[in-house]
Image: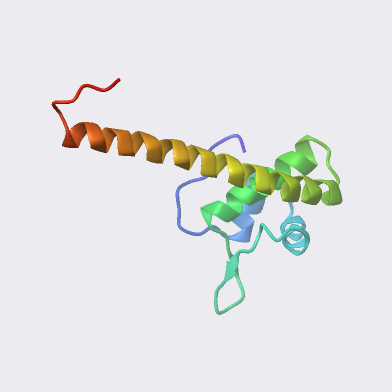
Length: 115
């Protein structure tokens, strides 16, 4: 993880494993343990990781390898924090919507001064 992962549509399991300095078998095991990691497979059965898959692997990598969580602990952490992250995103989107509506109103009525 010293250098950034190149921007691509899909990454092979070898590229992802090398990026995180993991064995490919570790990634395959994590796929069975975490529903967050679901790479697509091509006709030959080769895994094709998207950028979102790589981000999910990174989140698990940080929890397990850097923070010392067990796989069960990481699973619980991700499931409990998922609802909180969704709530945070909804709140941010509501703030953006309110701002955009206010901006729209200002642009439609340029003679009125905002409060």
